[in-house]
Image 1: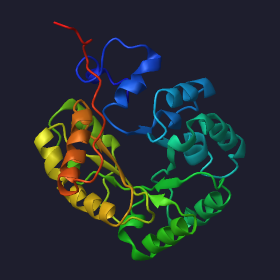
Image 2: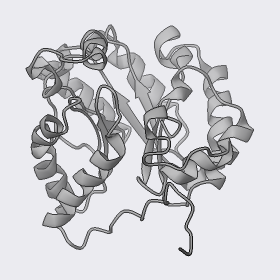
Image 3: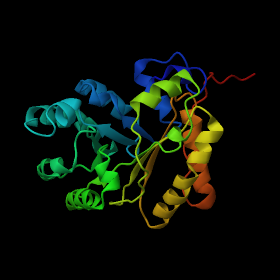
Image 4: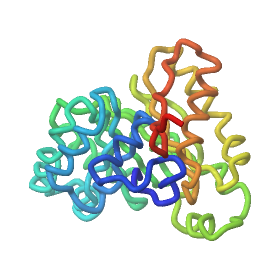
Length: 275
């Protein structure tokens, strides 16, 4: 996302060399979703560049490759997993969680496979799981089964909140595209670990997006008061305003908890001059 074109020249300096773009993004936000790793495992040199551009406290939530989660469905993917973990090593403590986004067809009957997979993962990482089968949100028995499985592995359940997005019909091309691609799931807000992760999808309208996250401001504030360390990712269909929106969300939580550390000051989009 740090190469998102609508941000260039508005929020991030432009042009920037490839080895400087993540550094500029990290002056706006202190976490990023590693979504591109779902489609292909990057070169290790690329990941080394990510580490060089970010401080040790920057958070990567990195998605496992689809070869592991969707094509092999967590079975017989040892070689792909080893390669992925090797490539991610340079991130060190920046790897906040390795993220398993499972397909919508992965249901309660597949939980034993997930349990076995989590048991065999290296203990040096945190893991987070996103599910999209409706049974995990609507059937109490399936909810308990998944919660118990994740708790046994000290893994987090990642909610993807699309409730606000689906409240009204789409009004733009980006919203129409997201309307057919994004999952329509009930909202979930229970943390299983001390590092909950939330993915929130608003609308292209800033006002509607802010209205929809009021729920999460309450929840995140409560988590922080409990001593947890949540990570929240704010999305909109076009993501044009995602950077300032993420900072606005942080500011709203900080207004309730002034002791929360502020985000860094964004790098200027234009070079500084004396006159």
